[in-house]
Image (cartoon, rainbow, N blue to C red; front, side):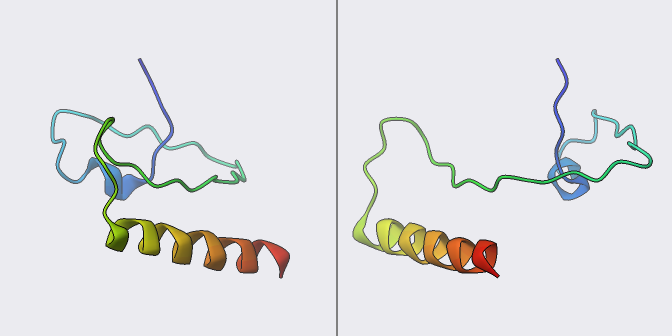
Length: 61
C-alpha cells in the first residue's frame, strides 16, 4: 500500500522509505485525527474550531 504524506510523517518510521515526486505541484487537504469512538473534550472541540476558522480564513485569501 502507498500514500502521499509529508516527509516529516516518516520521522518515527525508519522502516519506510520516501520516493520523491519530482515536478509535481500538490494541494493538500488538512485534517484533524483522533481515535474512533473517543469523545472529544471541550478543549479538543475548541482547538478544532480554531483550526477550521484559520483554515477557512487562509483559503479565502
